[in-house]
Image (cartoon, rainbow, N blue to C red):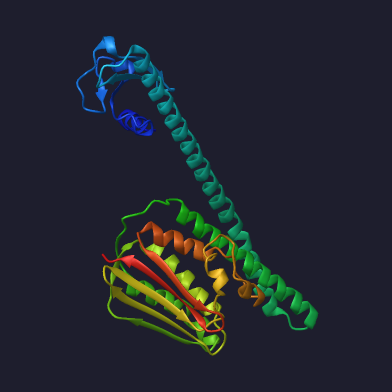
Length: 325
């Protein structure tokens, strides 16, 4: 909750009361007045004390210039009203924060509990498909469609977990020095086989082994989303190029592909929860629209930036800048 000195100072600013000295104290320490303006202690005969809010603060308002008692009273009551409004705002903000915390906790618990049975279902379907010999084309088609649905559901659950983790602490974080090249190599190796299956020209280039201020888990989630999307949305025979370089006081990670691209009208909506570009939906490629939301959240937490350049049919370039360690 807001402190007494801050409360009185904000009330004074809200009322534009520069010609008035403002003092406050708590009933348990009525002999000690906290002066906001730095003026001498007011004379009891020219001051007025009022209770403020549930915390029962006392307010004393004393004019720097002689004023009638009625004006002193009006000023004091004005300060009391302003303080009441500030306290109400603080209480509402605290309630919203608590509600958001509970929502994120609920999301994490539910998605985590759903993840295990979906993974089990997907594994059983794959095992069953591998044992089928005398099945009809229709049976195989139905089972493959069910497997794809399970895969989509698992992707949604994983994205929800990542987003909930990213939003658990939305304030900008200082971070610690994290070496980027090893994390890039891990993510590159993870998607290498998938890229080879699509006959993509998949490459990784690093000017130096840079370190950025972040956390390993955050960087891994950022890389997994950006590189995974590039491989997913690039057609067979295309290329995906991952680059690491230094740019002023930032480490710059760029992921450039020759994929389907993003319509100009859709660029502004990228990063909105569950939003997907129309051509991505039309292509029938599985996705949730939560990956870039997570990336934006994590990049902002560590004082970085995310830039997107894209052209339909020619590809996209996503560039993340993180402060150098």
